[in-house]
Image (cartoon, rainbow, N blue to C red; front, side, top):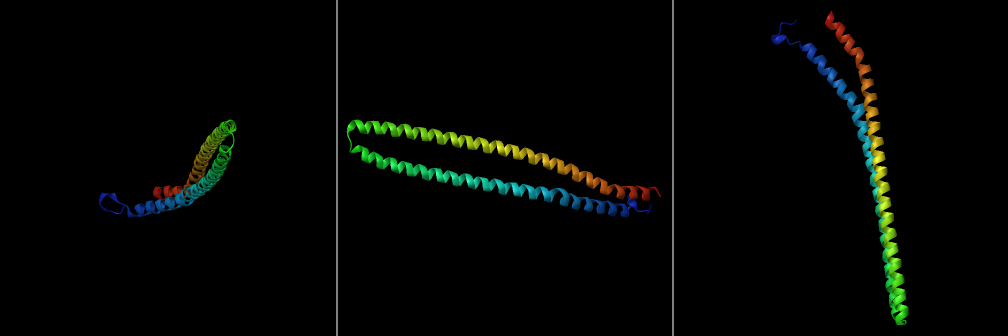
Amino acid sequence: MTGLPLNIDWQQIVLHLFNFVILSTGLYILLYKPVKDFMNKREEHYRAMDEAAKEAGDKARAAKEEYESKLASAEEEISQMKKAATQRAKEASDITLANAQTQAAGIIAEAKSLAESERERILSNAKDEVVFLAGEATAKIMDSQKDVYENFARSVQH
């Protein structure tokens, strides 16, 4: 006892603050920083995937525009032919365009579905990894702090 008011032991307060600083630093180094780095890498990965998907979409739009321009020129040539031949070519081009749009919609829907399932799988794996790493880090911290607490308990008993 130091005789201070309210039984304040400054040495104990300083020791607790020191332990808190060690714990905070350890948690930052072992948990926060690796998880933050991991999340940044994942974000960059998804950003790259998004850019690749946009490029694929641009290529598909360019192909569609090229197809539509060729279709327009074909319609000009067909308009010079007989009325019956014009009607048959128009019907065939409409069917082809509808099929292409149906296929394009199916491909886009399938790609979105695959991307979403991959995203869910990756998020699930990431959550599992974070929980596992947090558990390991906590166990290591507790093991490393065990001697400090035992020494502290011995010093308090004496």
